[in-house]
Image (cartoon, rainbow, N blue to C red; front, top):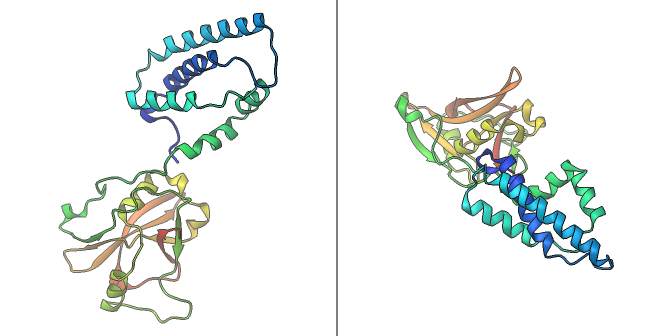
Length: 242
């Protein structure tokens, strides 16, 4: 859920949206069930026009993408006219609630199209790389142990074959996105070493390596672990939540 407004134009968006909202309110003849006087309606409309014009002028000072202006205009145009002042005030007095309400408009974070830690520069070969899903967030991931409780440890080619056969695992692109948005990683996962076997590298020495994310000294750190060395009890494979 990207928070914030695209292009960092929060103030510009707010101003422009308020201007659009003022224009939208001009078309409302009154809340259903109410019977305001004509003079009250006219005063309200004049006030809305003044507010809308003022915010529209301010919005022009902060340019926004055309598609985004169209999107906000469509959202404002579909606001229900039955919203009364009390209902509106409840939302404006509760920014956290409003943020949660609008959070549904934000798609989970998109993963990058390229690998930030491109190990081909070190002579590594990319064996596998999970590009999907295209979006990921702390709410859409889950972790699972590599082996069942009581199962014997695996090493060498046996563990490599098993890792290569895994399905639905997240990879380095997803790990890098979560590293860039550490607040998305649930706090309870700090006690684990998070393994992203959707991406598998082969180093010049012939070892297969996978991205690992660990909590160290108050921050998340991305490293690479040798698959042939097996997995510890503290390791957790990261996949998309079922």
